[in-house]
Image (cartoon, rainbow, N blue to C red):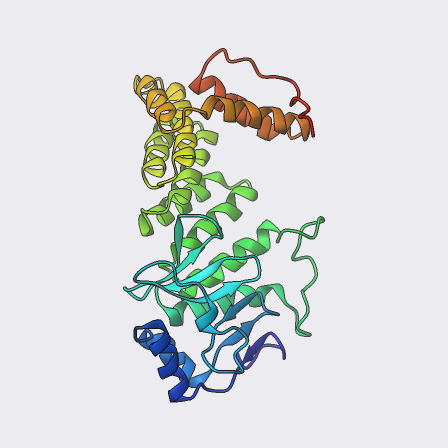
Amino acid sequence: MARLPAGLIRVRPPAEPEEIARAEEKLGRPLPATYASFLRSFDGADLFHESIVIAGVGRGATRALQTLPQERPGELVFGEALWGDRYALAADGRVLRHDPGADERAIAGTSFERWLDATVAREQILFGSDGEYAEDVFDPSGQEVTPTIALRQAERALKVDPGAADTEHARGLALVRLGRRDAALAAFRAASELDANNPWPLFDLGRTALALDKPAVALPAFRQAAAATREDATAARLLAWAVRAAVAAGDDEAAGLRREALARDPQLVAGLTRAASAAGEDADDEARAEEIALLEAVAPGTPIPRRLPVLPH
């Protein structure tokens, strides 16, 4: 960290023992040993212009641990990302990433120390020696890191923490963007093996397998993804992908999967119809084709309206 340009890593002075004790009293439990050790050196940190903020427990902390929502038993939320993700320490010492408003979580690090080192290794690739964003790290829109840089970020982080399923998933997504689908398939498989309870590496495994004309590989991935989510509408949509894979594979499981998908969400057909229409309105041909393919798999012959109806104000 000391070799990084000034301002990219900003840490607070050590927390006082009594400040750590007060935080533990307010939380009603001891802080995890690795996080408490960090606080005894730095009372929180601001990483890369507040891209990620690690909470502290004293008055001068950039973000106070006591103000972060602690909604899940057995976890301690200790940090937030600029885009809304929250980071939590699980009872087994792993770092979990929670998307805002989502039930699923991803394994972001195998320990607090490895997560921190891997985060620094990943994010520093984006910056030049002056502490500003380096040239050519974003696509022309300026909204997304280029796939080549995203792949370098993931590979750099995985050297530090090879068991971080979330990073392995990110590596697969970068490989898909680069057109390297076979390598992406292996990355998604590795991510799903590291974190079988996260449906999204499994979903991307299935989707990539379909693109490679491997529906027999895609089918179990979609089924496992649906089983890993508790939200009925999401599970139904994942099952719709499973139906599509079963049809492509000539598997007689398709009929049963259709019934299962519609049982999880009776509004599935209507939702897919609306999504296809909305994609048409947005001139997003790829998304429209995807929604139509799912609709035809789940409910063959369903008409697709060309435009969304105009709703009264």
